[in-house]
Length: 145
View 1 (cartoon, rainbow, N blue to C red):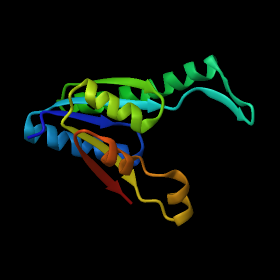
View 2 (view 1 turned 90 degrees about the horizontal axis):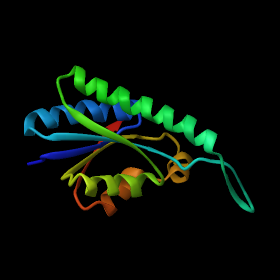
View 3 (view 1 turned 180 degrees about the horizontal axis):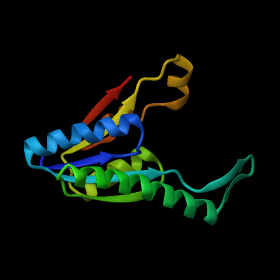
């Protein structure tokens, strides 16, 4: 069964539900848990000539994402689970699949919220769909409405 589970955690309602489902799976299969929070790259401005890197913005964002990750780790610890986690920067799908390979995960758990309008669905793309296509292991998509 699943012995090494990676949870892509962002603190959202969908992420919280995925965290709960991840706990159930870990308990059932005696799995090791790994959390990853993926922050976008720290570009302060993107224009026709390219992006401008802002180190201060990146530091603030890294602190915010670290707080989200720490919250997830604390929730797991309060439920009696031991987990490790890391904040990484870059494209969500690239970073999640990279972390899954790094920890030798056999399952990725990710939350997904159904978007109401077709325009919102089209514009945002789907991280969960891309993970299913690009991951070397199983992917569990936990859906919230």
